Length: 300
Image (cartoon, rainbow, N blue to C red; front, top):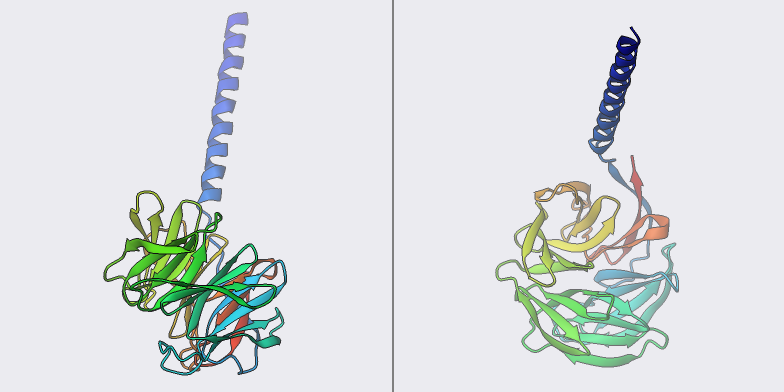
């Protein structure tokens, strides 16, 4: 009788463990398979129309200012010296319209330490962020139309040539071809720890390139005339020059990008974007619209 009772207790204990573990597994699976929240963009403000053919924006978190690249008059690939850099604040006020002048067609930019690097047709212009003076112009041999630019944590500069399908790398102010992406026409670029992300202007592909092996992985499709890339929760926002912004889910590699914004009917482009992380704010230069527009990034 005693043996039977002990056996019953043991069986009951084992059964309770099985039920507990099955419930735990079910709960974990449920949490993993919950759908991602929807990304919503809500317009906040727009600058005055004084930013002539503004192509790119870059937020300086330390100084709480935004650098704007203005390409000037058309054609946008002319070495005419009418390009400039402006400074605006996070409320859309133009602080200094002509911070740097005499550039040709400045586009993508980023900074390392106290220097702002700007892509300008076939050269990288290195600007002192305190004085606004051009410290150096780094000529990129054989470049045709340098477009977007990003900088690694060690100061290496990566820049796309969207008309020659190449990515250049600048180390210690010396440029060389890092990768030939024949037929891709790379535009937007974003550097991560182990990868370089690039969006195509011609094919609609958004890809990741391994820094060491140069192996390419498809992240998303459907972004024709892709322009700028910024990281957000669960993925990336990618702009399309005609006037669109897409969300790319990093947990669904190879899937179609989700369109969040379309301003083509308003004749407002969406060029090289940036974000203000602490305010969940997306900044979009409208190119021929001559303004920068800010949107609140919400998750619903």
